[in-house]
Length: 115
Length: 112
Image (cartoon, rainbow over all chains, first blue to last red; front, side, top):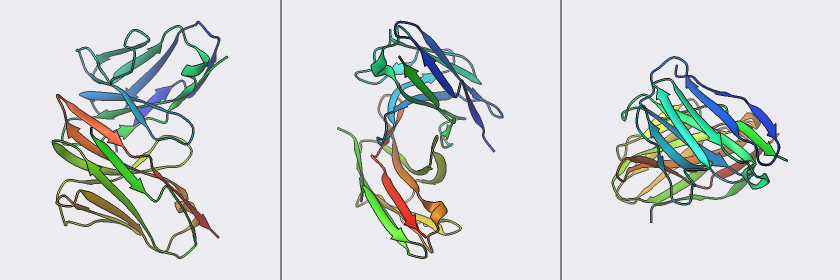
């Protein structure tokens, strides 16, 4: 199977601080990783697409300076929420894909609460 | 603008019923359509459809794609309470790179 992990699963931070979320593909090399945000009872909204070794492609309306994405290796991508505010509180989910002929596999998600 | 529309938005049925969930889409450079089941956490993959008219089955679930009419259906037969979840339809398209557009989901509740 294809397993994707995320860490942490839940984080609470104070307003103004930064939070880093890790996404790892455990048993395959992911050429592409995706970051999504999901608000309660809403669908997944794609934030950015990242390919290993290159800059992430952000969706319209997503601030790249606020949501820093690093895809340093074929098994790890990180999302850093900088200067977090309460409105950034959400469920952040990553997914990974081996190559374009495979489906995306989702991580378990990270619930971020900014107080 | 690319979009994926699911219907109904919510559905309540009794155990044993058969349900059909709908997904229509408008995207440029369609690549594939995917169905996911989401319970409390992240979505779990159900089906990936790329060709019209070929039904994919997994147990009591099945799905088919119509690329001419731009829609897909997900069928669940003999529903069980464990089928209660949000079912998400997503379309992958190529727009300067592959991107995935998700529908709003159908919230299914199966009563015992």
